[in-house]
Length: 196
Image (cartoon, rainbow, N blue to C red):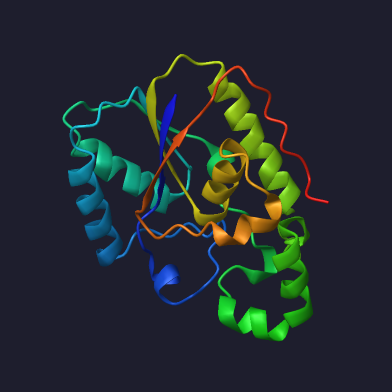
């Protein structure tokens, strides 16, 4: 199974370095243009199905791609593909948080499983919901699919499917509307577990 993994187009929160999490922002003008450019690149790709996070910025990106794809594919939104919920840090400037909580972010850099924003979602819980999605996906007979998600969720998918080390997790940075093409090797157990 071949997976085309896309991060949603730009929002004003992306532009202003604000943590978005579950804040349900729409694409800004640049984000719409990014999605349109991406849709041109993918217009002749025949996807069996398109999956998207249920947040507006991802759905919008997926819809723009699908509307411009000559094959017009069934699009399913899935809550398990949502970005990590940032709790008290939703809408806060990321660069300021890194300065304010230096020791925390040093720890997080070494082990992403410590990235548990105050009153937010635990990183381990995000990994588990992504694993649940992938385990279901493995049971399907798709040849080529498109997934539109978010930075952290897509990096988790990449880490699992490429069998990468969790201590390299933060190196897997995907730009808005960037495509990663991955091979999902079916009939193998998804065993990536907590980084130790």
